[in-house]
Length: 95
View (cartoon, rainbow, N blue to C red):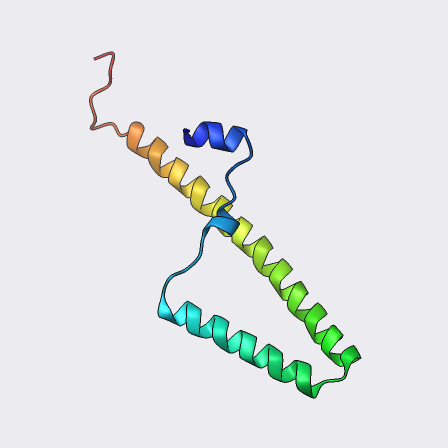
């Protein structure tokens, strides 16, 4: 299936399709899980719920930033393509 068809059919989810495979990411994720477990043991249920809410808000803001980075990257890529096509040094089809 082409990317256009996948976009049209709502099958493209960049934020769900990316899973970094580098060791730094895995280590940070492991550490995050470890710290979360420690805090769950140390805090009261109410305090841990508040911490969990803070983490959810951070994820929401990161999702918004990722969307903006995606928009910027896509826009810059399209502008780069347009600039390349409009390059006066390239022969035009009608020439």
